[in-house]
Length: 351
Image (cartoon, helix red, strand yellow):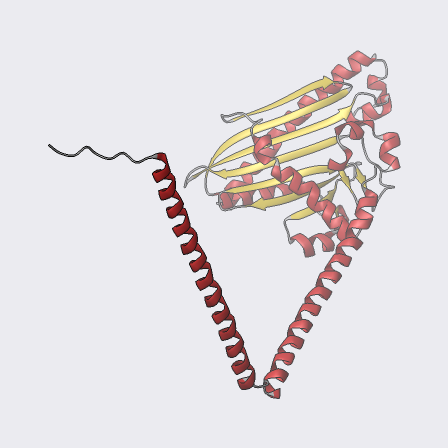
């Protein structure tokens, strides 16, 4: 019969575990000893190689040192010149911005007399600054309008039409002129016809334009400031892309260079856009907003309407306001028809 299997006692298991732990400790101790010896060897090797390197290292030739120093000097001079240019540019900007920031305070003439302009946002209609600061003001006024071109065009009708809407709200009479035309022709040809129409409407005298040399030097023939001689001067600027031509306009109600110039209390902004719809068709859109206060004297109202004072002096405020709104609507409708006729006549002349 086979012999019975012998079972390990707890003492035998403990002895076996002790032997395993002892063997592991001895192996770990031996591994640490080997690592220490290897580390000592590597340190000695590094020290030996360092000594060899020191004995073989030579000083750089003076020519190489001189070349390196020369290169460093050139780089330092270049950096110095660049920093000097930046300082000069910063000083130039400060000279422009300092008076510009001072002019951004509302002028006393506006604060005391022009309530409409205060409510409408006087900076959008005021020409501020002098010299380069004045150019920044021209740029601000016209580029602000240009950036809002799409918003203005969204107010126009989607189909060819013309309309004048006159309304009164918060003591302000606002006239809104919208027109939409489809023209067979190229953008450049249509734009040229509009430009010819404008030149026929402008006053053809040298004193009718302000800051001619300043504006021509900065903007070419794309920006001009027209004096209409009736208490109104307006700024016009032309922007052009391959598919769109935009002319923006704004009436100047305060001019820092001409604070003494009489100004009527009104706010006028306008856009005229020529879009190339396809190869042979252009869309011409116009949107203009014209506001004036109702809190004007009978004399001022008569002057605006182009009537003798005696014709409206007997009217009460309500009747006078109604007459003013009717006159505004009829005047702008007639003006738009006249402009359209002149435009199509100029368009034919271009052909």
